[in-house]
Amino acid sequence: ARSDMVSFADSLVAPLSLINALIAAVGERRQEETRRVFDRLEEIWAEYDVYAKAEESDGV
Picture 1 (cartoon, rainbow, N blue to C red):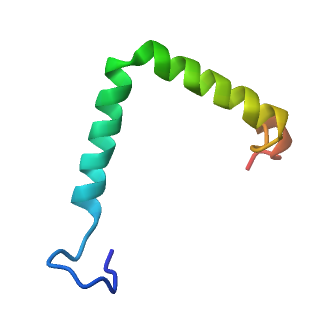
Picture 2 (picture 1 turned 90 degrees about the vertical axis):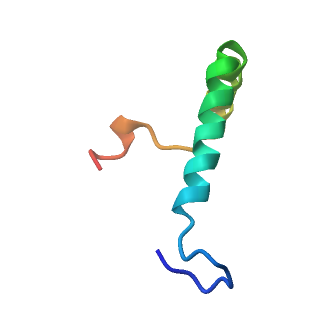
């Protein structure tokens, strides 16, 4: 995807792929902490109805 950024690179795919790999590596090394954080986030999201549940989304 092109952007109007003044840059030597026309795509952000490579930098975003690197960022994704770094996040995945950190998550892999800190599995237990990552699991606790996401469990807590799920509780917060459920409490505040941040995301629709699958059965509430009418199959979409």
